[in-house]
Image (cartoon, rainbow, N blue to C red):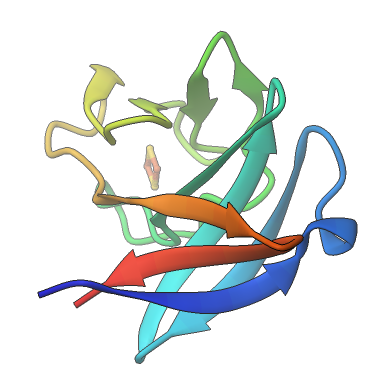
Length: 103
Ligand code: FES
């Protein structure tokens, strides 16, 4: 059963920005893109390097190392060289606090 955890205030995450968070021992990348919040695995599963700093366009994030693209909404792979999806975690904003659901 997933439980929502408070991870940041909305004031900490500007438009088109990202922050590294740790929730229950999981490294996640919290992103704000086109007015929406997303939380995905912090490490790309191609070569286990950080997704942080990857460009975000049209609902996709591009790994800054070798260019794999993933959907921010569901983590699905949209371009090689990765072939496994990232995990995308549910995000909700409650009273200006960003919360992320993890098990
Ligand atoms: S580490 Fe992300 S594409 Fe290689």
